[in-house]
Length: 112
Length: 114
Image (cartoon, rainbow over all chains, first blue to last red; front, side, top):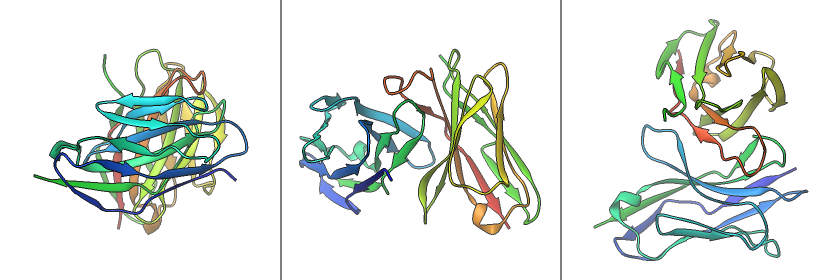
């Protein structure tokens, strides 16, 4: 069945460092892909999305490109801030539904 | 525009009891879906409702049920609570048109079963 695999955390970085969080997926169709972020005590916030191959989603300095050939959707940011500390979830959406399949989440800790 | 509202924020119940959680979607959204988040299993899809009809269901026992009302508000019910049902329950809403309609999540209801 469909699944999402993302790198284990925590990822610990200094402020202004470069961030990469790896995400790969397995799907039978052509799902949309998402990154969500969760801050302590809150729900999930949509960070960015891509709906088809080669699409690049971007928001708040974060970017991810839908790579069909490598079935990947890695999250990157050129310069992280302390305020980016949170848990990041990669997810795929089963076509024509609101069913999201999530990865296990990656905790990011950014220190000044 | 108000976001997705879930009530209550916190609940403490005893094994064997039942519980009802409520979700009010963003105005105009017709699809509501529910997810369970636990440290062990992560985020898992429970079910999805669109125009008062269950459109999809996850792999959960029949103790978990839900419904959607004509104003798109949704409730989920868990009967005969077990310790393992302790979790953060998240509700999400969307226009219901598929991949280009993003899901917006509420802040969740944290259920503790003792």
